[in-house]
Every structure is written in structure tokens, then in C-alpha cells.
Image (cartoon, rainbow, N blue to C red; front, side, top):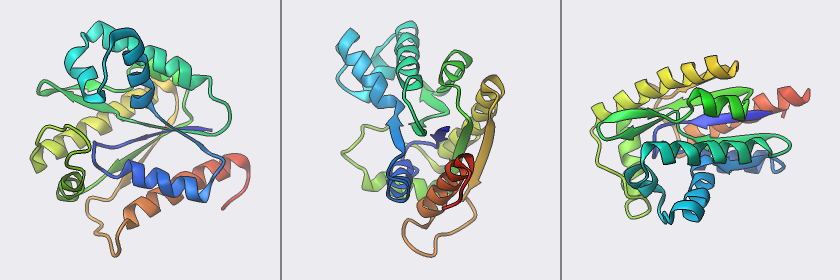
Length: 199
């Protein structure tokens, strides 16, 4: 099974995927941006993930996206792809999974995670120094989450796959990482059902 996991930056996808890997060690987890960066390094001398969208002209960025999709599509077995449904660029949004990409990836499902923007801001504050992110207000984050929802549906339509929305915006955590654990269990259950068993 091939699952695409999407959420706005700083939402906790990495933590969710860490829990998935603990529950299902044989799963392959790939970061789309890492694949793109390796290609951008090789062909354009880009050394930083954030510089890809800032420094690469749109046509070159598209080429890098396509090459990454082709590489990831070749991976065998159950695969989870960590990526973005939409990318904030110059005050607007660029599709992270346009038709030419989603049709190469051929996913079985897109899982979209949504959170209270204040929770995302708190998580991002802990990541200071790890990524070079522009400052965003809660309203900016909510707009990005809305864009993600629209883009995820558009991608699912082109890729003929199912969208699952895990909406945690009005569900406070009763313990640290509870949302990540719930999301991980959901993803593992999807995979196990496709294998004909439950975990």
C-alpha cells in the first residue's frame, strides 16, 4: 500500500511517522522533500530544502518534483510518503501534489492531518534553528490548512484514491503526543487492513 501523509509544516508528521515505524517496523517511510533535495543538490547545487522553493525557477522546481516522484514510485512494499498538499510561496499556495506528480506516485490513500493553529505554533517554537521558516499567524496557518484540504481532494481526484481527514483542531490532547499516536494507529490500521489483518 502507498499512503501519502500531509499536514502543514510543524504539525508533528515526523513524530507520527516515528510511532508508525515503532508499530510497523517493516514499513518504508520516505520524505518527498529529502528526495527532491538530493536531486536539486545534484543538478542545481542547492544545499538547503527551503532554498528549493526560493531559488529554483518554477520550471526547474517542477522537474525536481517529477524526478523525485519517479524515484519514490519505484519503491517496493508498503510505503508512506511524508510530503505537503500545498506549499506556501510568495504569499500564495503552490500544489505539492499536482496531477503530473500524483499520477506517477499512484497512492492508495492520502491522509490529511489538521490541528489547532496555536498547537502548531507551539510545536514550531520548539523547532527554532532546525528549519528556516517564515513567521505565520494563527490565521495564516488556518488558511494553509484550508488550502491543504482543497489540494488533497484535487490530488485524490486525479490519483483516484481516498482522502482521510484526521481533524484534531477541537480535540485537546490529554497527554503529550496523543494526536501523533492516534494518527499513527489510524495509518497502521489502514495498512494492516490492506494486508488482510489488524494490529
